[in-house]
Length: 548
Image 1 (cartoon, rainbow, N blue to C red):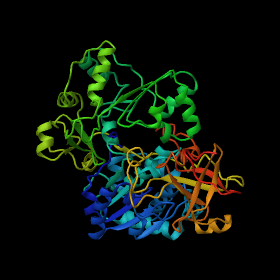
Image 2 (image 1 turned 90 degrees about the vertical axis):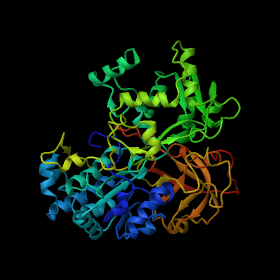
Image 3 (image 1 turned 180 degrees about the vertical axis):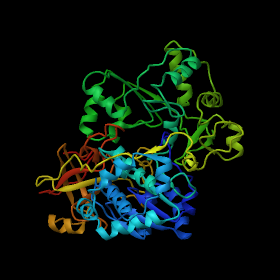
Image 4 (image 1 turned 90 degrees about the horizontal axis):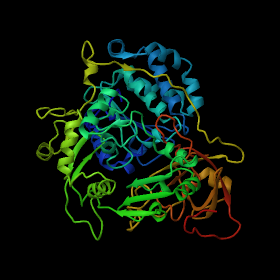
């Protein structure tokens, strides 16, 4: 954000803050290590607001729960912003010195009164007012979010709406005041930092900037395409239209992780050539033409990992890969040689030295320093730089160093998959503490916490539908149907249901989800599908895939 693809704050800052807003994040189950830091903040006296459609296990620790309607995050943020302005609680000095676009933002949120906010979000007006005043008056405040914000068709707008609140109050760029996006999976931050996104080189550098591109062309001794590539959703669109016929998948299981599973399977099976490089024979690997067995990067490889606080740490090899499995780096260099480019046999340390040469964020992070200092937080441009626990402190300089931070005008846009008489229930998806993503890494062992996949419904809906806990039902969306047992969850409001993607071999939840994609981020709207639940006329058990 503000030109840097990472959160603004160190984990420790939430221990020292005065107010915590946990927005679209069940961090107790999905980010338990970070949640321990949050609990220290609570113990130290921080007040906590949890914004989530479900009354999750994280909500149990909140002082106030804002149980909003799925997909109404922009409306809630704009209502909070409008109330802060109307109450005269803006940080006017910060806005005038460090931001742009305030007048347009003020005009845009004027219609989001407390009454309209309650209508759009189902959060009571007095609760909206309370949180607005508490956030604006707090000396230090942090907003933390996860996939509950970003897995929507308007994901980027959701994030902009939250950032606007930090600019309105000056809760950014100071210790204890910041914006904390918790990454969805391990090392997602590191992957992006290394350039594994279609418009960036390593260190967040723009592919379409001629001067930056020239630096990489000199380093690599070849020309680099001057336009951004496709993100994942665009790749599937290209498959649909026959523009993409060959795909190389590394450490990903799109067959079971992508929305609208039927379409995903059709497109992957229709490729002329599919190569999968992974530590498991996933369902994606099952349909591949070539499978390259890889090493487990966390224990069988040398390298680095980057957390959501931008901390880069060393990963050390403890075991040799089994059988024919090879380190990812070795596989890629052997593949390059087969394609006519001899890269030699670079070590992980040598590749990291290349990162240091090319990335201004990482220039000062030698392996020696990473070892000695238990990791460093970027940006760390030189060997004598201490690293940067807090980003954007420059916004507090007078005059501001560099570009000002801009307000962004965004408006409420409801979920694409609308509720109707035919599909009256809202399905939202997420994760549980005991499992990880599509279950490839966690499904092979037992856990006393794990009970397989279920469709979770409110007590009110269970009565209305005439179903009981454990009863197997058919769940239908506009894209397909599955069968799953019922779980009754008193933390759900009437009309809201919940499932995960952890057990796709038993219950393929993504048959139900919609591939409505945010045009800016490429993320599908996993959080909002419209469904109905049907009682089954005969006893039925959930089989492999669970599809009907």
